[in-house]
Length: 421
Image 1 (cartoon, rainbow, N blue to C red):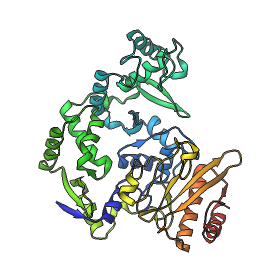
Image 2: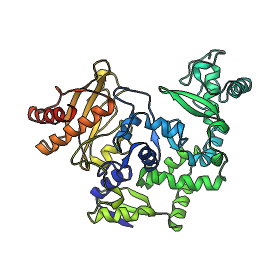
Image 3: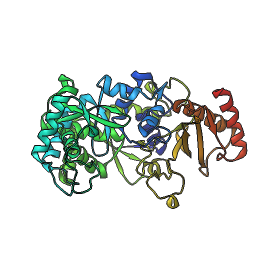
């Protein structure tokens, strides 16, 4: 078992996610490459300044435009939306996800109190409507209202449509805003991917993807992550056997991170990157196309893989909790607070809001970590990052009253004035 430093651990996770040492993808084609590099992109409907998935891509892709994601997914059919925690995955993975969908169909909609499977006549009605009328959204269906409340819709037809999506009979073919537009699978899925991979192949695929998705997977929690991909229980014994098989086949290895009690798994295909980083080198394929994160800060999305769900604390010793669903009096920071990446560390956070009537980006709150830099180099990097972010969301002005200390704010304003004029 090899041992790596905590710095290598942090840089590897950032680099594997395409965030460090700077943006290495560009434009529409780069958007496709970035999502493949990320192994999947989590989607969320909230649009305070931009949606989480758009902020995630802004941090990885030079010249990213808001329409690039939908064009890559729905015009070029490069990705499909799926899952309870809604993600976009590469379309080439669909044959493996058919196993997950099979388990979904067998288990039913366990979170619905009224039924596990929608009434057969409602399912038949929805499929016939799609077949005859073409692609449709929830709003296009009438029919009986649900007798009990459901997060997934207010009509029986809406629940049936969602169920058909879960089991792979229909797919999301487009979106209006963030509203889903569905169609039959055979009219969305490219023919080359319209099959179900053998069960053993799919299970082996997800065994590898569980590691790739996390970059470095904690061996103690790998099994539960795999169970989520497969949508079935994975026993401790099965988990151990699968890990040993990956190691025996030369696909994965174990490693230790200094001062950590946990053991980790990594894919052997990433060995050269780990070796470079441990030797103090940046992998050649990670070379930025523009400014580095030392020259220009990046704001991380609320659902970014490197910082969401407690990972910021584990990796960066940075407390981060998305407080959007907390009552105002319980929030420590702000409604839509984003971590700030400077170099290879999370050093601050800000709470942005876009006023679309005045095209003004308001920074409602700004918090530096105790050990965060406050020098001119950081101020310049923060100013450049704010300028790029403002252009990305379409803001013409940035309101910085919340940024402290005053000297930092003054230098940031100088950079913004020069770059936004």
